[in-house]
Structure formats: structure tokens, C-alpha cells
Image (tube, rainbow, N blue to C red; front, side, top):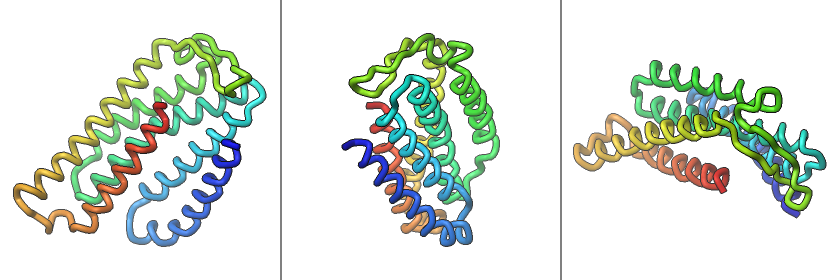
Length: 194
């Protein structure tokens, strides 16, 4: 039953990409479409985990989800900086470098044991029972840093709006878009961590 829900959500996300692709690439940067594409990839991998019959299939899907979750905060931070016309290049380049390094570590975990030291498929839940390696803590440290940076940008925007009432810096519709994307982002991160 859960696998059908994941498959249905994946199909809806592909339709959303098809609908929003022509609209957003002309008006805005590629960050919006990249956000939707990463969400679709993540949902598809949850479907693969729900229907996995071997530890290898489940591990590949789990690695893809971890890799996608590395780039969600980056793209979200890029959207915020793009909407606010904030300088972002240096911070995003450093975070992208660490995300790529962690992605390589995650993708080679079955050979190196740096992310998962050992793993096996639990046939009852279709989840992987795993023993975490050293880079799993580095992964969470990276996520915490990117979330703190993102919330710092959001909090800074709220201070600008409430104290100085400068609506020429970011329009109210962009502010509402920031808030709605923030809620979506926090919901996705909550689903991932549970």
C-alpha cells in the first residue's frame, strides 16, 4: 500500500515539473526546477525502498536519498539568496564542495565502509539495518550547518521586514513564497529524519 502512495506522489511530482518547467525557467533561475527534480528523485527512491527485495537495491535507493538530502539545503539557500538578491557565491561554493565530497563517500560506502560500516535488509520493513560509520556524523554536521545558515537567512529577512519595513528589498509575494518553501522544506526534512 505504501509503495503505491510513493508511486502516485512520484507521478504527481513529475507532472508538477512538466507544468512548472516552462513557467519558472523563464522568470527565475534553475533552483526551483532543481528543487522539484530532487524531490521527485527522493520520492522515487522511497518507492524503491518500499519495494526492495534485496539489500543491494535498498542500499542504492538509500544512498540516493542521502545524496539528494545533501543538495536540498543548498538549492533552498540558493533560492533564498536569489529572491533577496543577496551575495551567495562563496558560501554556496564551499557548501557545494563539501556536498560533493560527502556524495562520493556515500556512493562508495559499500566499498569503503566510511558511511555504513555494515548493513543488511530487514525483510519485514524493507529497511536497511545498519551500523553507521564515521562520515555519518559528518553528514549530519553538514546538514546542521546548512540548516543554520538557511534559518539565519530567513531570520534576517524577518528582521528586515518587521523592524525596517523595507518591502522594496523583497516584495511581499516573494516573502510569502519564501515562507511557503520554508514550510515545505522543513516538512521534507522532518519526513526524512523519521
